[in-house]
View 1 (cartoon, rainbow, N blue to C red):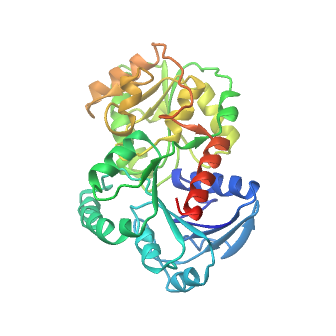
View 2: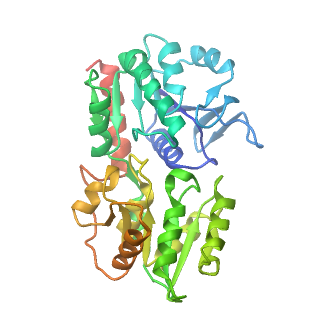
Amino acid sequence: MHVLQVTPRYPPNMGGVETVVQEMSELLVARGVKVTVYSVDFGKGLPRRQRVNGVLIKRFVPLLGDPFYFPEPCFVASLRRERADIVHVHNIHVLLPFLVALFKHRKQKLLLQPHYHRFGQSSFRHSLLKLYVHVLNSMVFSRVDIAVANSVYEERILREDFPRYRNFMLVPEGIDVDEVRRVKRKPDEPKRILYVGALKGYKNIDKVLEGFALLIKGKNTGFRLVVVGSGPQRAFLTSRARDLDIDMFVEWKHGLSREQLLCEYAKASALVLLSPLESFSRVVYEGLLMGVPVVVLDYGATEYLVKAGFAEGVGSFRREDIANALLRAVTKTYPKISEGENTFLNWEEYSRRVVSIYSRLLEGN
């Protein structure tokens, strides 16, 4: 079996989708599957072609980068030459599924993993997404053999927004459960509130800063905010922290190794993520598995966690609501979450299910 994975980016460029594709690809190779990855992130010293842990990676130059990831013309020529049995394309918020659906060989099976969160990162991008949804409905999903949702929430909004398509399957995302559970929590003093992720507007880190500022009003020295990540909003956010007069209480970190990141989890008294544009949040589930209290939005992909009592919910971006939720999170005890049908899987079970889907496709069932 030969599988072609198509993704906007691939490690060392990291993110949620990139983690899924890398882990999946390497586990598939370990199961005897031939895996080739196409990514649209050639540049910055990365090789155009390399093999890493058995996975053959071919990188293409983006003519249009984030958020479109439209590749150079040789991408289509290379795709037409590729003799993969299955093409597995990721992320319907970019143009790659459209190109793959149009230009793959007719006999190749097409599996789509949408990573869909329904909204654009800005009003302009949302208006483009609404137009693109019509293209996806008419020209992409009609060519897709199976579409895989990574959460109950994503499956629901996919069925609502693409009602003519019927062949959705739910495969909750994979997590290295054993690695995360080996982490021993040792919360530090002053209490550390942790954010992990990209420094982008839709993550609402500025709202976290405002809520944190209210939490420590009067120079309460019992708290620190630790922001781990990089992105285009870094300068704005550090300036915002100075304007709020909390810069001496905020630590900014980036480029951490996996071990260093796990150490930050272990020291945290709470983890916060207020992004509405998620179909699944690995950061949140890793925190929950380690027993770190988590503050999330009480709607969207994290609504289930709040309703089930696993996480502290915030219903608005008012600084008072955020401050109160952070305070509750560091003082309450929450039940631990476990892997299962509607939450997440360990990577071994995840890869087993993906191989099962591939086999079904090739058998014509």
